[in-house]
Image (spheres, rainbow, N blue to C red):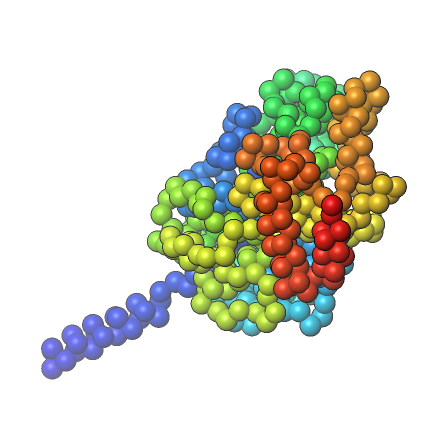
Length: 482
């Protein structure tokens, strides 16, 4: 009888243990307008920028060739949430996802997950009001700048998860380093300004919680695709202070995840939505427009400190990968595919290129651009170029563009660069291995002719395969080249 009882206890213990096995959760952290080269572990030339992000990368895997599919805030998030390119989701710009297109958070809800979102609620499936069971807008977190409030609401959501005993998907969207940048003075001067009531007069960027580090113009390094001018140096310093505050948010929410006891059974992904909001980066298709930090921590699955530099992954692959990792069926109509094999240390064929877009921008104007990005080279088609229309986007509203335009009046080299930004040319081809800042267009270089042809053929194939409505125009323009 005793042996039978012990057998029953042992059997029951095994059953209870299996029942209690924690299901995999997902925390997706996004950064707003952060260039990849601002991150320490990705080679930032400015010291001490992202200690928390660097720590996360050392605990898991970082992709060397991780792109977004479109370098604009709202449409890139639509790609993440649908696994579809913009022309297949309906979200070409600041527009809604088509009603018949399934989304990741809704799919997870149907499969028993709790879903939560902090920040960027106006840009992540805003038309699907029930997609996230828990939601906190940026207005509730000092315009998405307060690490304390991000921490508070992360803890609140995780507390609800514990009570309901369900797996979760939590999307945490920092609003830094998006404009307005933090433009406060050094600590000793800042105290005086605050005591005399001058804080508000310094501009919106100084009205939010202070970052853990304030950068000054002499401390920073100007991105290679910009000229080194005093106003630009000032604006990039403000940007780096905002990068520091974004990193503060990352550190805080990860601490709350650990504190709540979920760190060991939560897959954490971190990514920026695109490059820095200055000319030649955001709202374009150059390499530094779409190449962002992409970090994955998955305890028990991914070994710490992996640098994945063999395969190219893109934003369109995010949703397929999450569903695959959770053991769920893929959503209907996805263009992307899971890179779960890469997270498991395997190789995967067909990961040589990223296909990137620009369609309609925040102003409502359309600038058709397509690019094929490889590990070293990149081809760009500016379908909007006609020699008359000029480019204009939000990235030209800060100090940088004004300084470039003014300095170009007396600098022929810079004047040529400014003109290129405004008017473009039909095609661009860059060797990013030798020219990471895309300063020398090699499209008409005879030595690159075979590579250009190969990239053009591949871009044409992908555009046709995905039903891109611009494919016929691209094919015609490429065929008509001399």
